[in-house]
Image (tube, rainbow, N blue to C red; front, side, top):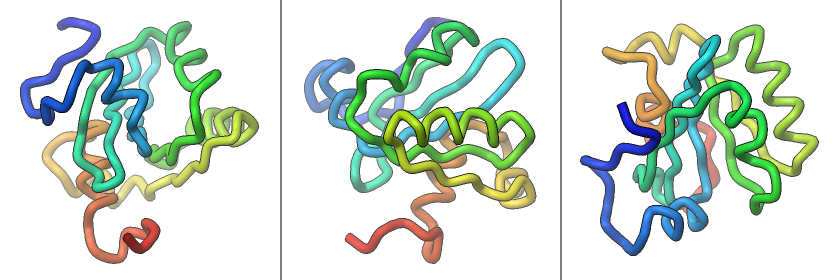
Length: 123
């Protein structure tokens, strides 16, 4: 599988440009490979990335503040605190909500954020 995939994403310029315009990133935490889904202000995915632990640790450094969404788990506490120190806003979703979907992926977390009453800011 490649570093980035984009079969279901809007084509509004280059991927780098789309990722830089993202306002939200949903993260599926794992041991060795982390899946990220970047989304615009309407929670539509604009890019996805699969990163190693080393690359993941640096991916949100030197970026404009993002809304980071992750499933609440032991490692999410660590990563959430780290991302908050970088100026990002972090939301942890309860595991039982994430497991309602067919797959526990970053894109599923974005779908949860789009759901009514998800605690996202009013647009």
